[in-house]
Image 1 (tube, each protein chain N blue to C red):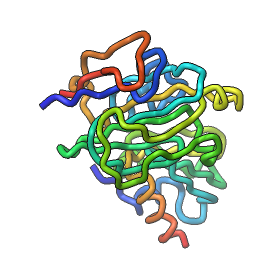
Image 2 (cartoon, rainbow over the protein chains, first blue to last red; image 1 turned 45 degrees about the horizontal axis):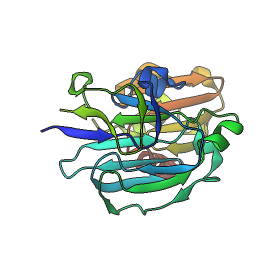
Image 3 (cartoon, rainbow over the protein chains, first blue to last red; image 1 turned 90 degrees about the vertical axis):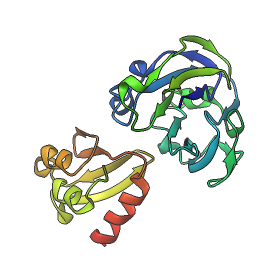
Image 4 (cartoon, chains in turn blue, purple; image 1 turned 60 degrees about the vertical axis):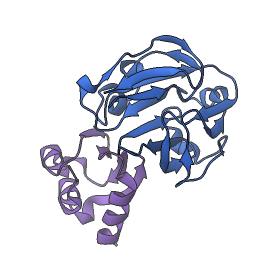
Length: 149
Length: 78
């Protein structure tokens, strides 16, 4: 069983180690990747098909029918923005297809507020060896980012 | 592994040491009165993924159940 995890935003795939937050860079909640987003307003999409089990303005978790959860975090320390600048395009509990829009946001505004807009994409509680095929470099929202086997 | 809520409170130095707990998807951001009372080894033994201490702010990485764990802790702290 292999889950293909899609890039939730357009930008440059840089890997989790580049995230300026040890929870993500040390893979404390799981392995994955990270995207440094293009600095333009845009939609963040579901990385896999399944159910939105958690939805905050700045972060969401989509769980597939096999129980695998993928976390998308839109920027670092963005919980402090309390939703300002983010618009929800779906609701917690919704079923979504991979690539379906979930949140509208503006990475440039996050950066202007003094925070990193980098987006960790985490295979929650996966073992390090279960994630491979990680793409680096330019990606569009909905492009393949890594595989979870 | 599910984190043990009472063991997390104990690891944070007990109910009286906790000023505020705020969940953020995968972690608890906790402000404590006395950081020296925080027992990182005890927190790890309670089933958390990681602990980061900066000043009197402790970040306890608990995984995606952070919201539930935070509300359980708030119920106990009252």
